[in-house]
Image (cartoon, rainbow, N blue to C red; front, side, top):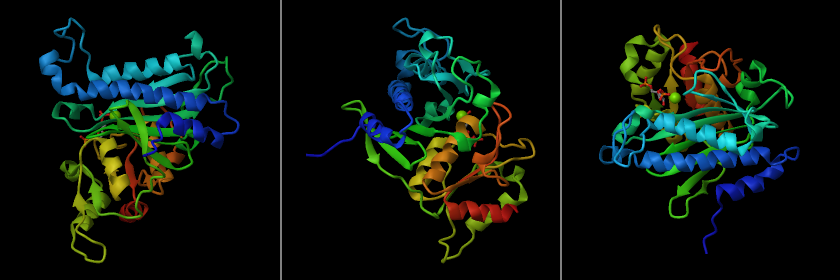
Length: 334
Ligand code: AHM
Ligand code: MG
């Protein structure tokens, strides 16, 4: 008989890794997993909007108000965190200000902060391309009962207690770390459970894939332009030319590179001196996962996880992936 380990079982088993914890982090992860399944159900139906009614503000044939999926995902995750009672503050890409949950009676004693991009790459939904959710979890610094302050939610990536992503792809996966390696779970739709499918994930030390939006080439720093040319040169020893793969959905690009080896780059440009991607709910969680899998994540000058954030929606340039490939990019930049 095949033995299946569900996300719930795995989380309970791994609770022993946190002897000081009382199961709150485990419950928080479980709540995220449940919201992910609900979002997955809606993402999978996205192609049906034309027959069920359009997204936006219109009313569908059932008389229900259809919401854009990223707004829907935001509401689902926040509501799961609120009713779960373990999260005191959520910073979401969809919300300008962080959402304080301690007013909701159930979350009064909650110790965790969650930063989340509820549906990253959502413009890809229309064309049936993978999208994702990215999340990051911190322990609050203030005592329970005190007001939540910047010190609580503007922590460095090194202080993350857990991070993960969900990829809504040809199959749906949840990949997460609590700082003790990376594990991946595939949703089995027949039983509605995430099942351990990729234990102890490791990113290859090097690879043959570079992922960057080359359409912006003209705006890239010279070092990045030179690196792209390097990728395209012929050299048998280093298996060049490399393959260019860019989906435009960070979770999908990172997930592929995590499995196959590669480097993902979103650099600064003159117009966007800090690049496009957000530190708190895109780059920090992805960097934590990739480092835990043996890879590397840099802005080009600094380790992403060491950055001291100054605002919730801060952007940073990102070079993330197989260690040797990231190091090579850095050689070109410095
Ligand atoms: P979003 O948060 O508005 O969805 O934007 C983030 C996405 C990432 O998933 C992806 O890597 C990047 O934007 C692609 O940007 P571009 O189209 O500029 O290459
Ligand atoms: Mg995003």
